[in-house]
Length: 602
Image: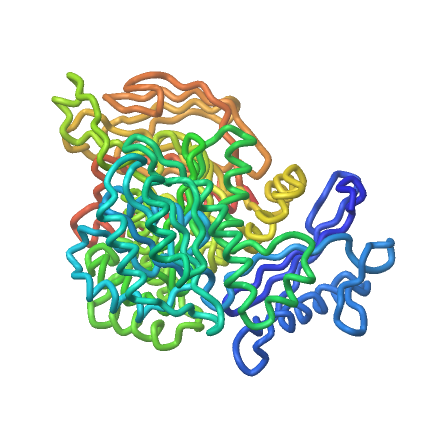
């Protein structure tokens, strides 16, 4: 079909528990979201046919819009004639656990880490990272491979023209393990080799007859270079050809769709990359679920994704509490509570994972744990998204005096937009609470826009962006994102402890007054959605707002449902009051300021 003739688009996301369907249609102002429907996913027994859940979700959508979308035999009505049907159908999927992979390399902090970045960026859940120097003995590696039963393996290692021995040994381990795929018993496990090109003949000899071997360009051709895209594309094509083809009902779903089915996380990453590229901005996004938390970033055009498999808000909530520690969770709880009561409430959530808070105190505790889950997940993301390991960096005079210098691609001061999604963020009773959770978890520096995905439609928009990028971007900005506002956070650069009450920032908002932001203060100013204000921001006392210490910034600040949030609580380090009574008083003070600003915005 000619893209110019497309008027009605159906897109679904087949999740582990729920299949979400959206209808996007062209109107006078372009493509917009028309309606949304959902139904339980049916990939598991007794149905074992994912298309049943899709048809149920589409049937609900049909009732909402008041026109037939399905024929009596369950097929889609095409094309749209103004009275019934749709023009194209697209889908993403993470049902059945999504794409599960083992990745392997020679050096854990070099080729194996590059392989992990490759798989995560392709939308996979990485079950295990193996390396020649990971301290596991060969027989232990074989046991791990046999036990896990992945959907696919990515084997890397060695720069082009470099080491061969260890790459061959890793291939021999996989050959000896003879792993069985998770789905299907009659097909060979896909293994993608993306290592030293000089070893390809040996890899072909070792694995060619036992596996569905595919060879692509080296993901680490030199120490200073990563080339991840060829392997990522191959992972996605193999996902369709091998994995999806053997999943319950997916062959029928593949016949229904007009474009290739895309792994849900890969689709989310794609729409983020499109938006970052279109606006030339750096984006950080998070999707926090019941069992896992995904973090996505696009910095200077480089895309990274990580999955924190043990950090979630229901099934994994005890893991968050255990790893964060009592003190870190308690610092966000704005009332007195003893340790035993806090632990009992967390355990209640773990054994009743689908329950929702019905008391204000329960909500406060859940949002406190959310902050820590997001912080821990972001710490993991920063580690994996850092600069290439093994590269020799030239030292300069500045680095001699600054032993904390890090070669990371993620500079919080350069972050332009922070996007949150997932139930605890998208469905918070008050939007200022979502903004507060994002700020407290990620501690954005400088000037950062805050937004939340209202109904988690980023996957469908991601796959749509592969054929209609402008339409996907327009719907993303108009119907998907809820603009929360802008966070303005000066960074104290003096190196000494920040004294409460120190003047940090002189703020002059054109037509809306002026004030001075002090250390330890969080102050929200009402500025509604789609509104902007010209501002003159003067950093004081060694503070930096992105242009250097003491450098004035004259900018246009964008509002949102939570307004403008000026955060003077410091960043390096970020410290809250150690006295419990004073801390509770401060938490309530900050909450009151943000609540008042949202009320004024409404």
